Length: 430
Ligand code: ADP
Ligand code: ASP
Ligand code: MG
Image (cartoon, rainbow, N blue to C red; front, top):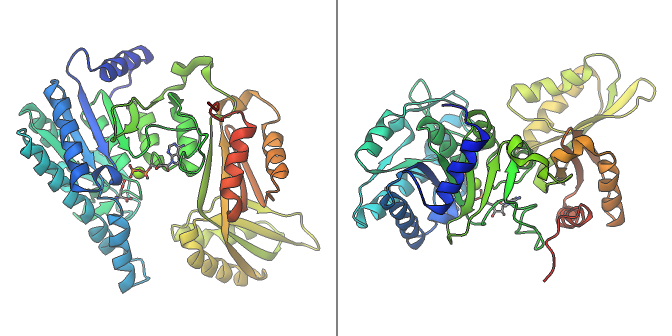
């Protein structure tokens, strides 16, 4: 896994988009909608075979058919609310087994050998964090051997295996990570992510009709957008691509239109706008602990049990103290709100704090842009825009290249559109 220069990056990107030049190793990842029906699977097979026929070495990574992972998880939930993570992974990972078989079959039907591989067959070894496992290593040998035989390799996304041999999954949207990791392991020239939109947009094009396609975005900005809710790429896949310098091209499986490239910052030069994109995350809930004794160690005592149970605490604010007590508010993923409230209430009782209340009808809207580093007043512009739209801000958090506000969930789309306009991101009207 080697780092590449910006020049090599552009050359290879150009060669891949124009279909010219030397044979490349190309990873093509197809998401749920791209393999959502027999017809879509046949379209995937045609694209993979056409790429292969141009002389390229092709690794296809696939997700479960659209809706399948949700269906499998819902089945498990009918049996238990308890997180039996090991068994849930066995169930959740099965969706990808079906789709690799179907894609490989469809490729064979076109007269080219398609060879399917489950996670354990390409030895995608992960840690033991079921449901959110981290990839530790991949044995590229079975894949490169198949590529050398001129087969099209079809790898199951989303899954791996831990050192004990148990099936693990890589977190929702994890097939993106499987694809990027495969690309790094086989030193692919390009990792193409085929999805249901034709690129990375300034915000989710499904909620903002005036979103604009971004031709090139930096790893750093994409990482922020993804971690703030833009699910077009899974966060860890961007992290991994940044580390191993994997070239990502996000594009649609419904046409040949070129999509968006994720590139290193040095390649983008001065092109960057102050705000590159707007993201939102509905998977947010807010907890407030009242009357927390204002002394060293109490916030740590409150939040420690949540961390210990794998609950990710995001925005945290503590109010000024009155009479030695203060309120502490923080957000957690919405699907964890029940457990989070239980652990926080136990911890609150132990330190002599008051009641813990929760509100699961909030969302987080964020603006992201590397240009913020050198531009003052971005936060005020954001607050102004939300204020003019009548959207009340409940919590705020900032970092070097993003500002996030927690708002009432009912205002999510309105807030996204207002911010999109306020930061000059709207596509010109025809
Ligand atoms: P797949 O199943 O192919 O992995 P996902 O549903 O995970 O597809 O991701 C694609 C979706 O991401 C799009 O349908 C779109 O609604 C959403 N999305 C959110 N933010 C953005 C963005 N900034 N640009 C493009 N798509 C976005
Ligand atoms: N099938 C998995 C999911 O729905 C992985 C993926 O689609 O990337 O989360
Ligand atoms: Mg996805």
